[in-house]
Length: 81
Length: 76
Image 1: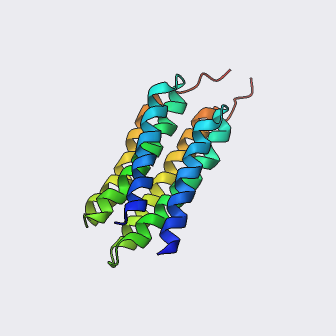
Image 2 (image 1 turned 60 degrees about the horizontal axis):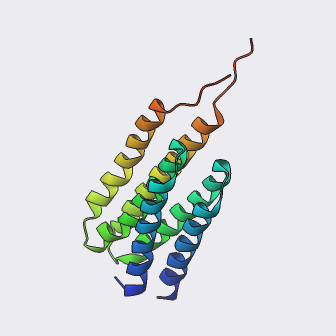
Image 3 (image 1 turned 180 degrees about the vertical axis):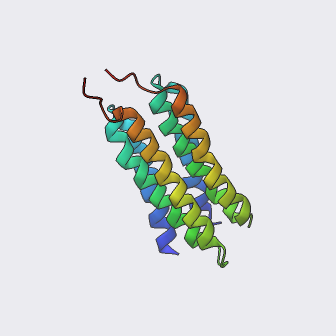
């Protein structure tokens, strides 16, 4: 039971760090930390065999989302003129 | 769900909501929306709607990617 408390604490702490950062690029690693902690909460919450599928789907989706935000913010590949 | 985990997930939702209201940059708003969606998921899983949770986890990044197409940064 202590593991899910630790995951919840890490999630709230990383969310507060996301709010505290001013630079947008420095927000994105803490957003990944929030995603990992919420994945841990989902996997530990319900003793059912399909829970791990929901946790894996959330893990893939959140990682895809933060990487899409990061690559769009950085501007992509610059063309040589 | 234990009440401490419920309080933590509610705190995630409220933090994401407040940050999405206060930020001006659209990328910061998207990051705050991602925190808000992360806080919603344990409530969906706690009731046992695991198929709904898996479908939402795969559909929510698609909406973020469609918004990112609109607010693409100008390349110099």
